[in-house]
Image (tube, rainbow, N blue to C red; front, side):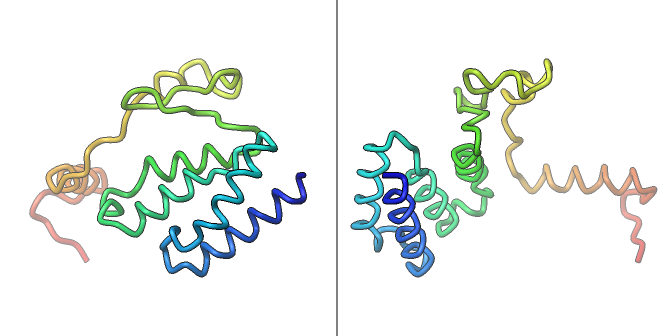
Length: 140
């Protein structure tokens, strides 16, 4: 059964690579993979893959697709997910607390700052100051 699942996943991935960013073109293979995945009790990250493809090919990529990338990374971890979504942030997955330091729980529960022009300008000015470049000063 594992060989069949691996073959279905390989076929689906190959189709996705040729789909031009349109996962719907591989719907038949996707359904076969989902069925085999369910029967084997293995998560093949189908939903995460599709969500990431849709995000990166839409206007959502302007926001970086962070949630989709994180979901994809966590789904593909060899030892299983280490972080799971909870509310607006993430928490260590059940049974995975041992891979984090004691303070990691509070770090994982944070959410990224909103991307704004003002935020980027403020960061740039602070970074320039840390390099000794004062506001309004230009160095080449």
